[in-house]
Image (cartoon, rainbow, N blue to C red):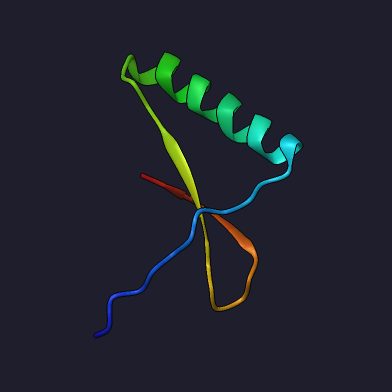
Length: 52
C-alpha cells in the first residue's frame, strides 16, 4: 500500500473559525491542549477535516 500525502487544506475564514471554536470546546471538555488540523483529500479536491 502506497503512503498518501495530504496537503494542508485552504479553508475559508468562516470554516477556520468553526474549526477553532471546536478546538476550544474540546479543550474545555478534556482539559487538554487540543489541536485540529485540516488536510485536503487529493482525490476529490474537497476540504476534509481531520484531527491530528
